[in-house]
Image (tube, rainbow, N blue to C red; front, side, top):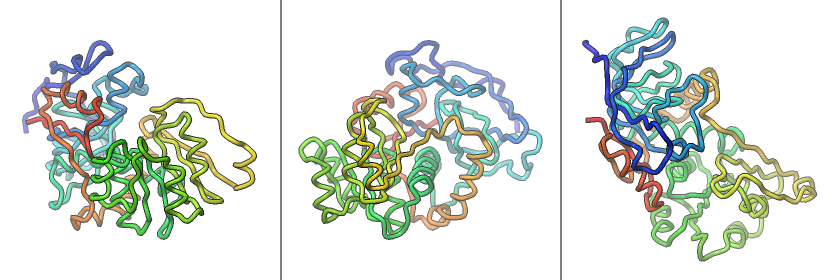
Length: 332
């Protein structure tokens, strides 16, 4: 097929508010060795995109300046070493950048097939949250069937994906959210317990819910003064995983309490990890999670879609904090 030499993309020249996200023309990327070129149908919008727009989260070396960490679409070209038989396949992919565009190059190992049970809009909302929740909650915190976990931001993309996976894998999940409406939405989506952190003390609520035992793991995207409060929620031998610091990058914690109760504090960021690690995670997801996707049992919760030209409105919605689930950009 004939591929255009230029494409529409969102590639702001300076940091700022949502208004800097305007469509521009950019060269269509060429897939390098081990990569495929995807004609993008839809791209997920994530909190790291907002941070990049504000100038707080620059792309890692070698990544495009165009934001966007997850896409879905059709493979239209292959680089050296990428299987030619993938041409024409519908995939979703985790990328280090470049998703807010009509075409993006993606490492072949970071692509996942899109089954008939999943629309391309739904598929575009899967990779970033799925990779993040899987690697942090089920690998770093080694959560297993029968465990109980606490996840903050219960109606975010991360939170709703965590709820879905916990439901499928036999894990009891407690979430926090910032309004009664969001608490109700989290409960409808499948949270076993949902706490309004603005009107309730989540530490006391977790103690009540667990009969004083605490949870086996906490997935935290707040940081700051939430960390010592999270530790109070953990059971003995509990695991605390940090994935963002929206509430502050510094925390003071009781070290002796960590020692006495044998707690584990860990965390990670995904974007800067190498392609080998991400390909390994993709293989794990295909083996353990993708059967649920193929059967229609695992889908992202979609809040709203916006055309690429309205990327500013998509970011304004995320900035406003009223979204429930994933925001997605569409290309056509």
